[in-house]
Image 1 (tube, helix red, strand yellow):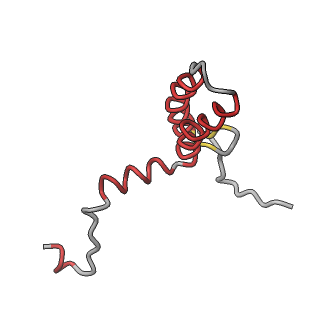
Image 2: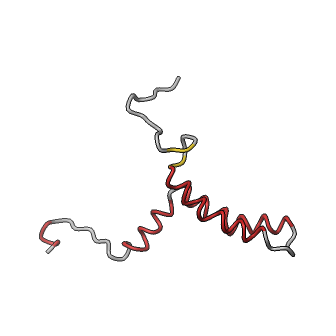
Length: 91
C-alpha cells in the first residue's frame, strides 16, 4: 500500500521522472554528438557504441539527473561562496 499526498503532482515531468528542462538540455547536447559519432565511416560498430557512450551518453545522463546545474553553479560561485556566522562578519 502506498500513501500519495494530496498536494503531490508530477506536472512538468516526463515519465514522472525527469524534468522537461533537463530532457531538452540532454537532447540538445546528445543529438549533435550522436550525429558526429554516427558519420565516422571507418570505425567498427562496437567502437562507435563505446565512443557514443563516452561522448554523448555520459553527458546526457548528467543533464537528465540535473547535475549540470549543480556543476555550473559550482564553477561560477564555488570560489566566491562565503559562510557568515554573525551579522558583524558581513560588513
